Image (cartoon, rainbow, N blue to C red; front, side, top):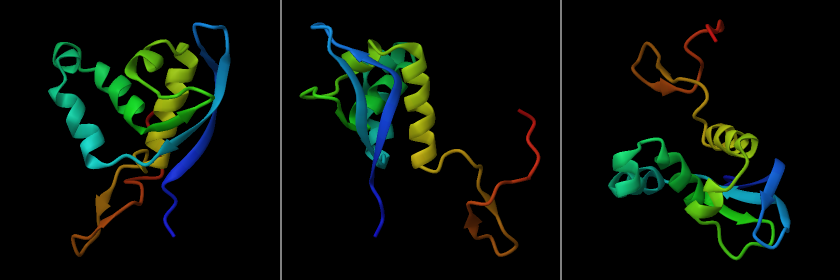
Length: 118
C-alpha cells in the first residue's frame, strides 16, 4: 500500500501566540492541485516565492495541537523549520532526483549522473 502521510519533527518548533511550542506534525503527499492552485493567488503573483508558503499550508495535515495549519502559521515559522519542511516536502514527493528517459523513452527515477556539482 502506498504511504501518503509522513510524520515529522521540526528542529525548532512553531511558537504560537500563547507561548505553546508545536514540533511534531504530519505531512501528506502533494497532489497536482496543491501546486497549481497557489499560482492563482495574488500573493504568489506579486511574489512567486510565496507559493512555498501556500503549498506547505495545504499539505501539512497536522502541526502539534493546532486546529489548522494556515499560510500565517507557515509565515511565522523559524527559518530553520521552513527550510526543513521544504526539504521534507521535496523528499517525500520524490522531487530530489532528476528523472531521465531510458533508451526506450520510459521515464525512470534514476539520477541523471552519480556526480553532483552542488
